[in-house]
Image 1 (tube, helix red, strand yellow):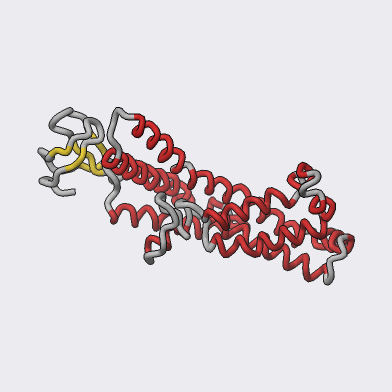
Image 2 (cartoon, helix red, strand yellow):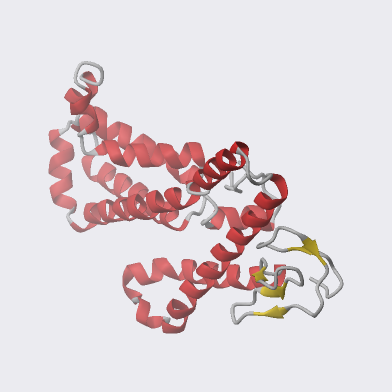
Length: 269
């Protein structure tokens, strides 16, 4: 943002010419004082700051598997301090961009304004919701996959009881799918690709461990949705259909290498 460039004030919604060079906050956000309303507005991060914060987030996310496997977060105290700072900066910059776009495209004081605010505001909750689903159920998949390796014999006995052939091999296969797929969901890397084997594994779990629930899918839906694989299956289907959201490595890679944007809020496909 140059000194002479006109800009849109976020307070009075007027396009004005700045009287001084933009200053920056400690987080790197440009800020300008509106000569009309005398209110100070902050503006989105520059591409350089965005790339810096994105790199910090990606580096800490890539460190996550090491921490989960026993390295511990104490191995990178600086990273764990700077990570929330970087995430908050990126989210705040995205919110400011949305505010500017909304002001530019929506007239104030109308029913359309209120409706557009509701629709656009609700749509911006999609990525946080997808993030919550990925984090929670990705972790649950990791936990279930780890159990199949730690308590291998118990799961072999269960697989034998469910008449699954080659029980020992299939316990390892199911555990690997859940462990690797769960980590990929958690960090948002190759999320849709990871969802395919997870969905297949949950369908097999339904057909072998919960056959009565499958038979009762229409006659007794409560039995179907209360079965253990249901929420794992639902979470995987949601990620497959809607993608991982903007808070994911997939989205960063799509922006970096020119991937297709799935929807207006930038979910990576």
